[in-house]
Image (tube, rainbow, N blue to C red; front, side):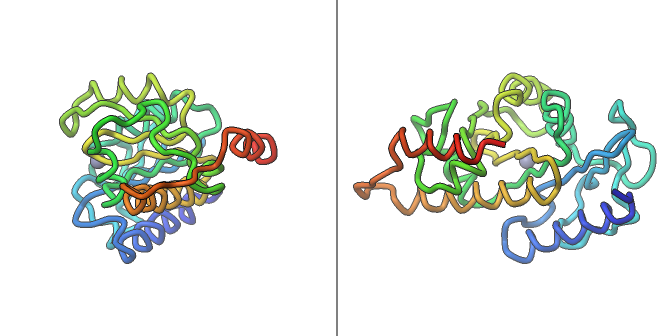
Length: 210
Ligand SMILES: [Zn+2]
């Protein structure tokens, strides 16, 4: 796809996420793969006011080629691309409900969400939990790398979700489903809940496996 169109798509997506309260302040970042590198939202930029022309352009080694300095969380994105062939875009948010779930005790680190709805199973799948590290800590990239091959959706403990998709649209749809599922998980806390059965989950995976 044309690079200028991808730049506009990133800015429009950022504004849409910001306008609906899924990103705040300078939190969250978006990247898209190019034939010879990546486009990455700049450090300290507000997702609601991205200038397409100033989005960081990185080469295949992650070095800045043009535009503003890239997000401090760029390494999270690159870890996803390097571990997932076919990954075309990555979105990372500090969205409230997902962050709240990431702070809960006793989560299953290989499958954070119980199977609440069909769309959670189909779009989020088995959500991996990665232990807490301070922002910008390179150890976080290593931790993401260990699970990224098997999980396109990863939840950073006490931090937020990182989701890979074949396209920007796919990654955004999946991270929005993740946020909605996190909200449902919180709403259902303390309520007796009927989850999808293992057979129902297997049937979804069979029908809708990508
Ligand atoms: Zn973050």
